Image (cartoon, rainbow, N blue to C red; front, top):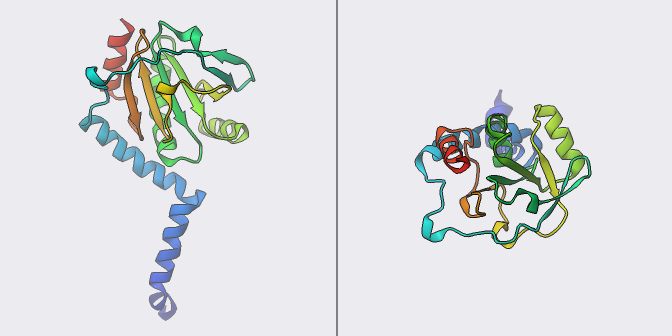
Length: 189
């Protein structure tokens, strides 16, 4: 008991390091981030202001799916598109995946979803299988259009049928919220 009291600060420090920098802390960090993202979705606006709205102009972007097939984003022109950049090692990405799965389940036949993984294919496949996700995951096969470029994960864009970026959100969000569903419903019409 004396040993623990004497070394409590060291034990707490080591625990903090394990929590912060190892895979053991990932589920806890993801859960905390998920809670925060649900709150921030209600507080902050997701939509880009009209005067700041950007059109991607260039749909020429090749993506490789999990089966190795190449798809060009050009085939999705004139459709509502959700593009999410993510990775399995990114706690905010992991935190928002359950809400994305629910949104995809509800809107997968009305909206194009592109989950672009910035990770090794083997890790992505293992992650999807472990979590039971059936999201349409892709890997970049060519350079991303400039308007969709971001160095942060996760980053999510929602494009309207004209290619305008309606949502440009960095960080975790509850994507299955009523606000996001209302936005998609308005864009689909």
